[in-house]
Amino acid sequence: MSNSNSKSLRETVAADYDGLAKRLTRCLGSSDFAREALHEAFLRVDRVSDAVPIHSPVDYLFRTALNVAKDRRKSDRHLLNAAEIAAIMDIPDDRPDPAMVVEARIELTEFQKALEELPARRRDVFIAAHLDHQPHREIAARFGINVRTVDFDLQHAMEHLSRRLGRNVLRRLGPRPKLKLNE
Image 1 (cartoon, rainbow, N blue to C red):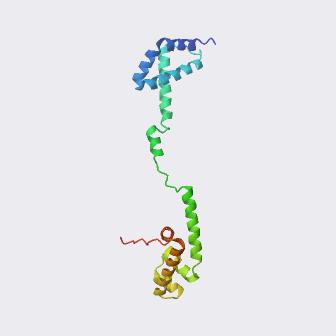
Image 2: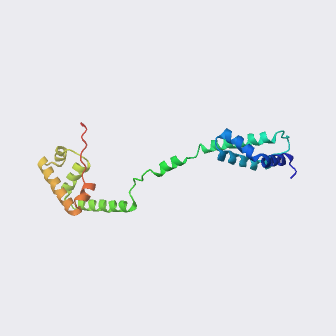
Image 3: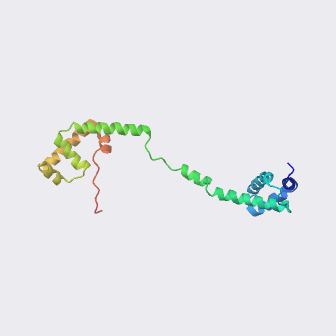
């Protein structure tokens, strides 16, 4: 390869590497970054053609290294820095682990079985009161019974479910307290 521009630029880097690195460090603010940019500029030297003569190899290398640094900073803006990566890694995973998922599915299946063991009206009253959140008066009117019978059916349904499932499971799967909108 008889490329005089490439040869001249390589000789310039070899002769004045420290001077170019110091000059770049002043412009870029980091000696490591300046040396990286200078190394990349040196790698690009082989691609320089002889079509246009280079009158000042030092200035050409310096400008090429600055352009390399500018391109690197532009591309680095799209990357996360160490603090951002650490913040992402510290986000807790609130999803249940596989064992908890299996346990919850088993409990839900047992809850459904225990619910099916109830007499039809008692089961429907329980569902209307605790899952559909209907007022006891509406449930009584729907089933043609009085409010006291609704209370009785709910009490017996809860006792049955507690016996079959235990109190802890019933608390997790059973009725939820109504939200008071006036508070």
